[in-house]
Length: 457
Ligand code: GUN
Ligand code: FE
Image (cartoon, rainbow, N blue to C red):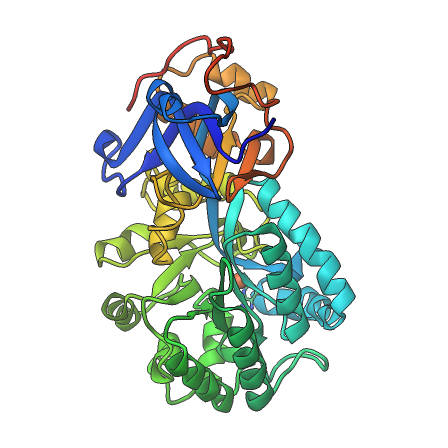
């Protein structure tokens, strides 16, 4: 008989702060033979297997050893209507939008298409270990309805919004200041705070919104201060030049958003690459969050994100895939390309900080670290099970790995969806790959252990 309580056994890794140096082991908890007790979608208890099993009652036990259990990954910038234009050849940002992206997004006027794509999109997220995402839907209200309905069915903590765009886009892909306002308002009323959903007010970027629409976006933000706000900032040099032509009074690109009252700690600014000193000051003062999108920035040839420079100003950077300009749904592959972008600037992305970033770090950027991003007791049971030996190349490399940091770096550079052995969303297994329920607390035989233990650091 299956109980409502679930005990996951495995190696546990969770962060309590951002690691400041490669040997900052105080930033995380690592338990070699650990366990999580889960009930009603929440983590009830975390500890050594021995301690947790003693309190587990009749919980079913799933043994994930020797794999690593971490909080589910968080993707802070992704475009739901771009699933079928990933890997479209040749262009930089503005051409890419006009040639591939905008025509594709017109298809999301159809409710049936949006619903079918939402199902595929959420499958892709969970298969890649992502349990929370912040998504742009298309301009059509129906696309946001499809997105939130799918999230609700899966009980996922998701953030999203329909894009506001009323100019410089083809027929069928523009709203008006008033319809954009009304549709957003209706979506916020219906979805924001319902179950695990949150709304993000989403002016796509300055080029596709008239000043009248930006003013309406400012009104929405003032009326719904607890909603997120998301847009794009300074991704590409031609984009910046065109923006400043369209908004001649603006001091700089960020000032367009700032002058309409959009900036706060609730705001996520995709890319934020080519920034002026005044813009960096404004980010530091308002707490708005730049979002680093490594695979996208390389794919579109956009430029190199200055992570260290922004962090030195006390700015909280998030990290994300930016599918469909990004080329992988995997936050592991995102870290891989992020590592290389920082290398080009003589900056470092150590695996401890990398894995903090895609879990607790992004949760902090969203102000949600009390609910997601860790394996802390009392938080939501969104969990990934990571296998650092998922491919032949990884397994061969792991034969020579001595430390936890090395194992994490193998995952960071070589990992992808094949390394995600299982994913739990609010305590429910999503991939169906979890080992058979091994036993119930009480009487059970010893399962396999791994060949060697790794040291920390
Ligand atoms: N700027 C405005 N819209 C988009 C988009 O869909 N993707 C990217 N990468 N940048 C944008
Ligand atoms: Fe984007």
